[in-house]
Image: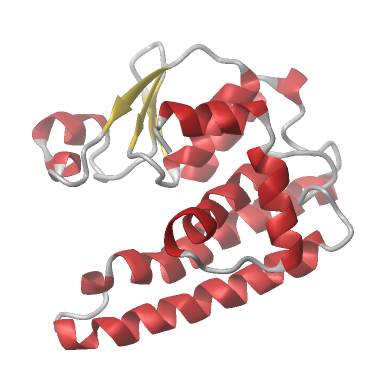
Length: 204
């Protein structure tokens, strides 16, 4: 398999899951600074012009964080990355969707790409401020859910990989303070060998 990624992007969550399951894979860096994601070669891989994209051994490609994560878990059931109970599965998907769609899509996207939300540069600070509000509100909810727990839903699961990458953006890039339970979760994630390897591979 081949993972198309940009260092430190949401693809980091998929990268660490590939390490967790022990699947053989290659990395292909997509150079966002040079807008490689809009080039003909990458658009042939993922017409959505974004990462992560996972090209499987038969040449087919999966996109979207949740879809790739679930695929990796289902094809490596021995790793038990999906909770056994229906309630646990629903809560895992609930967390993943909220992180990817709201904390990432509505919050961090405003912080990283304010021009997508306001045409005039004079408005970008307001866009970023709103993004930070969304991120902090989202982190507060995740923090509440983590109270008294090591992992989001029972044992380590796909939800924890989803929680990690925005936590990394906050703690490792933007100096946004993490609430106490989320901070402890971040430390536990950093201590996992799979996470350490993914960060090393991406030069982070």
